[in-house]
Length: 250
Image (cartoon, rainbow, N blue to C red; front, side, top):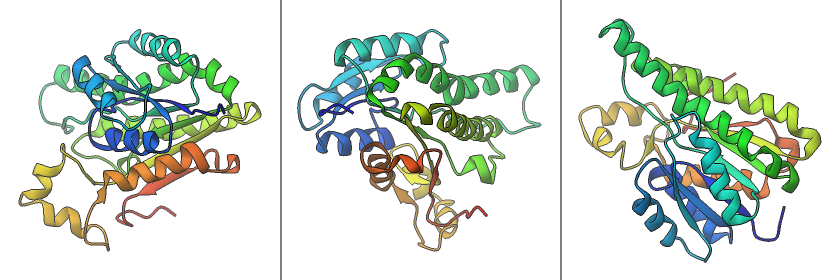
């Protein structure tokens, strides 16, 4: 990698993505913060990071051509890329058996486009530069890929696919020196989950973990930082569970 690590993180304006952007900026990285449609918010998030040279970008990752445009913009600004973090995600309940078929089909397609197809297209668009820098690909997946998501089955399916994609890439790119990792959080306290956790179902969620709490965005970001900057290449293909032992895989 280069002396100044260049990072592109999708969904970086809030929550887990924002925490990842901050911890990597503190480590001296130059960070491109992606948002879906609010350019001013993306620029503000980038401007708030410590250090210099950060960038705010927008792209709707459900659009098949948007990932390539996002990659072009980030690569042009940074002159290359060392770390790609696919964090942007979509979670909208669509239980099987409820609603009509067209509504379910539309929800299914949206979730796969944002949570799986978008990351795959962005990886492809950045791959030449990641090979050149012997960089890192980090995909934020979910406990739901293993435990299941009955209220949002397309989310669980897409995240399971992203885990599999990560491991396929680890096999394909090992010879190029590119490390590929997946981070699979459970419940995380963010602005998106805070209302639910404060409501009547919050205690049930916290009891899922022997810690008696959910994870924090900073804890997930610490795992991402390790994979981006410190993890040995021999760890490539690893899926790291950040769920407070609320779900243990065998």
